[in-house]
Length: 171
Image 1 (tube, rainbow, N blue to C red):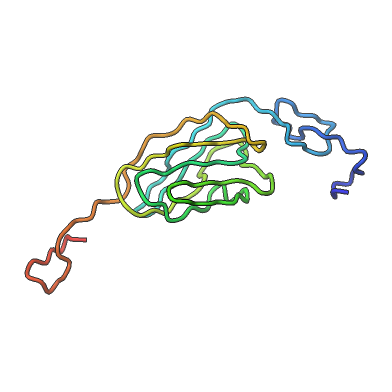
Image 2: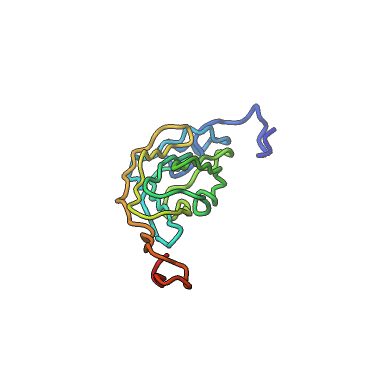
C-alpha cells in the first residue's frame, strides 16, 4: 500500500496532471509519463547586488533538474528561490551549479527566481552550458539571457592611514 487509499492491485498508472497533454483522469498513481507543450524556457539573471545575484527562470514545463556554469566570478554559494521551495538538492563545484529533486517534486511551470547566488570578484558574468531537464531526464530547449557586469573593480592604492601615500579611495 502506498497510502493513497487505493489497493495496489487496483492502481491505474498514468499521468495525473490535468495541465499535461496526456492527462488520464482515471489514473490513480502518477508514473512520470506526463507530456507538455514545448513552449518557451528561459534562464537568465535577475536582481544584482554587491555580493549576490538572482538566477531567473521562466519555464513552460516542470523542471526536474538543472545544471549551468557561472563564468566570470567565483561562486561561493547558491540557495533559495523556486529550487529551495521545490526541495531541490543543490551542489556547487567550481563554477558549476547543479540542482535536482530526490523526491521527484519538480519546479512547476511558471516564472520567478530559481535561486540566489553569492559570489566574489568582478567583471562580466555569463551563464554557460545551461541544461534544464524534465523529471525523466529529457533535455528541455532553453534560451539563455545576456551577460551582466557584476562587482566593482577594486581601487588600487595604499590603505594605511598613517602612511604618507595613503589613498582614502583605495580598497
